[in-house]
Image 1 (cartoon, rainbow, N blue to C red):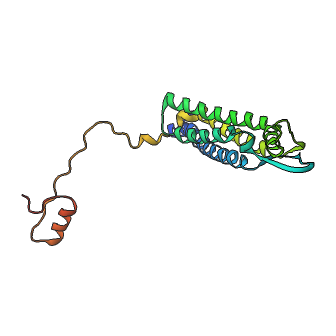
Image 2: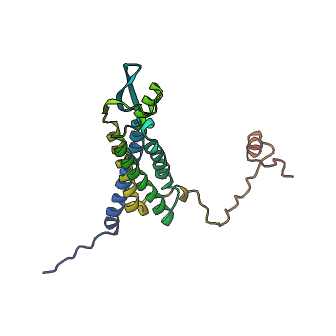
Length: 213
């Protein structure tokens, strides 16, 4: 009885890494773009609110995320730029940019969580409204938007980690447009019949002299 040993096809062996690279690329693009958008949107929302006592009366105050801290929005923009730059560089440069992307996400998470309990922005508004630098707010409360910004930062961090792990398998935008230095072959001139007007017009379109002079 003869035994036949199955030999794996080379294409099937390469399909696994290629598929993982495509999936990680799609996931990194989705999480990175979504994370940056979520972080930027969150900083425009109300993060905290409170009440200041002005001239014997209560004066409501609110602070947006950009009033509390500008770090999440700035890092989200840096992360989005790094996400695009990942495909413009190769090898060591790609690892460096992927690290910037991951650090941008991590910094966004930390800054958003720190701003979730911050009252400095409202205290500053209370001091301006009361004309007293020692004035502060009371009945302070915070919304969930800082935590939403932290989620956006986590998505950016995920995109950076995927780029660090699988980025070497991703294509580079510049690869298609790079030239290897070899001269391009010159096309043979097309013969123009001076008796045919259509040939003359085609030659003029190509930038050639239809008279052959």
